[in-house]
Length: 393
Length: 46
Image (cartoon, rainbow over all chains, first blue to last red; front, side, top):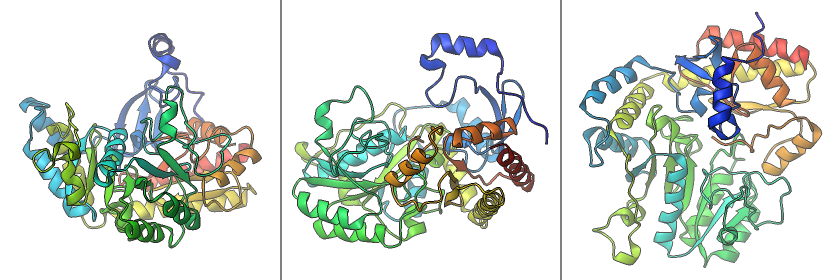
């Protein structure tokens, strides 16, 4: 195997990027990584170097880059106009496909990013419950809103349930609207929900938190407790939706929330995300169905635009075909198993963590059940800047 | 460790984010073979 030299493509472009972009990048990858082309499971940088692509645009390109059927569908739509603001048939068809696929989805509202979807899912829970606080889990990622960027990756975690802002620029008062619990700790969640039930609007969770699978019974317990108190349970399925199964993590783990958010795969590589949920909660988005004080105001210029919708729709059609998920899981299992064997062979204290469609190495041999366990791994390897919970997307 | 490992992998033709391998329907046996080969080489250099 030929070793490729250090990435240094087209120095002029990198210099230009550093001049016009803060940090020289869009904020997602280092300035030196400038990508030019993707096809199938491969990607090329501006210097022409070829890679097996496990980045997949941070997840959306689940059926591969430039899939011929998606490309053809987009090419048919573009000459007809790329956005109208009003409804279009592709968006309606995509909403119908989502309702048929996702267990909790009676209805769908489109937005353009996972961040927006999570923000509005929390707003929907507040509108429904007429209460303000949201409980989230430490290390859980729910986009970039002020409410979501709480205790995502605290370097020095505090006492539960106090939320710690992850970014400059977030009003101090927002932290008071969020409660934080430890993932996979049902006892803690149960106790917090009982204590705060009269001020809680909802509970938001990634059913598979970053790379950490739920322990047996955790999601079921969360479902039981929230149901007991009539508190909406929100599954953030921006990452797992249409990835772990056609019906997402809720199908894969067999637990149906009240609301879920979708992104990445559902947009087929375009800016489209969605809030889905129970009809009585989604009704808050309907101006005609709600009194003024119950109406959840939400519009978006590019929401459900026909290009993104047809890209998503064709992507779902490809995934619905027999054998699609079996193939992804087979590839993932082969890779996870080979990597585990290699780590053992080379005597590296590390583990492969995740599920076949989405995994990574964590450089510790200690069990991982929540965010704080991943910090222990970090301390054992001080040079590492990678945490399974620290990076978004 | 993870950062160093990821860098070694990128030099050997694997593109991934800081903390995830996203698997796709489009990945082929050749992609799997190349990936396993790159892991083996990179682990020797850790």
